[in-house]
Length: 52
Image (tube, rainbow, N blue to C red; front, top):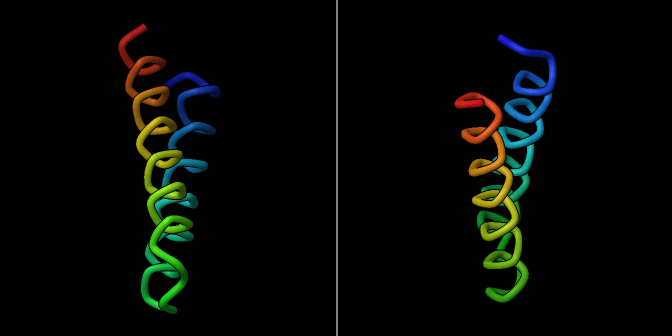
């Protein structure tokens, strides 16, 4: 596994955790949605680096 793929995987997992914590704490929906979208984009970047 490439170093950038490993780094993106860790960052994606961290963003998913932050999103889950924000949802669990009851933050505003728009903030949780923004975090979710960013997590999804990071996940897409991770998949792209894994494929390439």
